[in-house]
Length: 391
Image 1 (cartoon, rainbow, N blue to C red):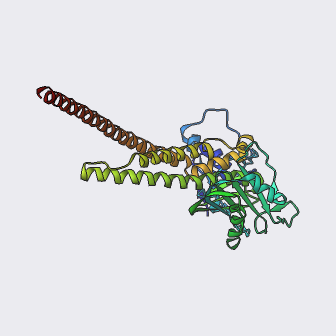
Image 2 (image 1 turned 45 degrees about the vertical axis):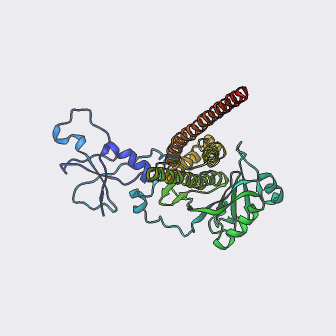
């Protein structure tokens, strides 16, 4: 069935996102139908009349070409850029009959159950599984368990459908597992738990999916809660793991700040009803310290504004890094966190002023009492001396 495409001015952009590197058998339909072109399309040198003006040219892709009009074909051998990211909602994904791939998805699970992990001791006890870093980033380690599955065509190995699993552990407490089955998750988490500190009462969890497709026309194709790559190597695992680790940790800190905001909301409502403020100075200072430490952890430990070294070196991984940061809305979520912390800061300043005024009032009353006591003592002394003199 023939499908109508966009005008000729956008022809090249459609090719870059939807077709193989060499375009063949495209039919050009001109109005009126009696006009025909040679196999190689050459623009005439003579002026073109309005009747045959080329802006009215309509491009039609026929699969197979069925039309009562005369058609001619031309060749376009310009290479197609494979670095362009194509969304899964593109028509090219729906039009390809060979888009299905029997390979299973690679599950990716992110966990956050502690605020610190001793990476040095973790590596010491898992030297056989440790993969040396390829960048300057030292706040995480990658451990490999099992072996990859060899490709039947002998072109290498693939993670899809194999017994191999990867674990990316971050110093700030996040753990990202690649290709680990559900019943094996607890065993991997226990490996890290022995080297973790600051265990949380409730573990945070998030899930994602990666799929390998070697014959993909682009390096990366994104979809809903998944990403499709030509191949998933160790640099891709590091890049994806870094974003998911930051996302799950940021979720924890956002909830911490939400708890602080809820406490100040309750205080403000109580003040609205009673007109008094009963919080102790120690409790207020604890809230101040908690808010400041959360902000410092997000900026310093998570490195939320530091770009991945792998993404700096290779544009392919920069695409993955930028897409996932946008997909998980890291920038927007931090902006929301910062807004909430400003609300907390405003309330803290207001309550500190109330406590300071209370302290000033207490000191003023204390001074008044001392002055009154001194006056009473002086009056008593004068009266006592007068009584003695009269005797």
